Image (cartoon, rainbow, N blue to C red):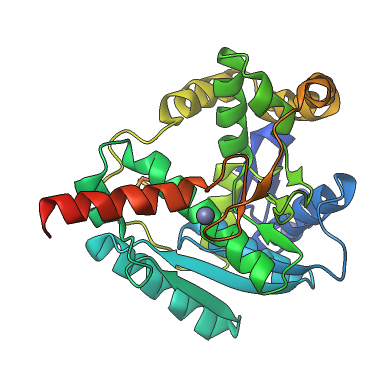
Length: 307
Ligand code: SF4
Ligand code: ZN
Ligand code: ZN
């Protein structure tokens, strides 16, 4: 197969776009997908100070690299979850990557915050991934606001977004459907959140990181027993094989026609007043935020168990 642009041998074939590219033209195509997405859906302004959440996976590192190549002011943020070897490896990959590329990096260590995930897992009997997600979102937002960043970017790609949208649609979850999209504006004490890879498939993201020589962390988290959305991603993979472009069309249709309709309904029903948490100042609709309540639960459990 030949590159659509220069007719050299292609290294990536993209049936969903009905095309193929050599390395140079795939890189240009990828960066254009990202920059056009940012512009068309108004994700970022040129003067935004962007904090990029870096897990150590291919998507987040590729996103950091792409935003930097596109000229944005980027700083990485890694949350060290304290999950044994898996977290050590992830952190090392992120630190090496940022050092090599000369990107500024901030690290939050949950061990130092007194809430490493293994300790939480031992004391709090609730699904660990949901708690882990709450802590990650809490610290992303806290660092973004306290350190003056105007946008928080995450590496969710098109496959992640479609799987999430599909799950929300299967439940007709109005609240989530009204909020889902590549940009959530800053409001009520929350920083602006953007997902600049929303037009990039997992396959395209993996190819970009591979071709750019970006190393990434792939030691699975020991707590990831059957990661959410995996089943939905498999269904979509089959659908995409039968009908290339379905994922893109499904998500674009939602952004153009579905999301605005759900947002209009939610606007009428919005009643929850958001106030600063009395403990940490982060936004919450209760008196103390989720994370402070979990910290208190952990403290009590440790006290009761005597260790
Ligand atoms: Fe956190 Fe669960 Fe992911 Fe492990 S698998 S990093 S516990 S969300
Ligand atoms: Zn080419
Ligand atoms: Zn709090």
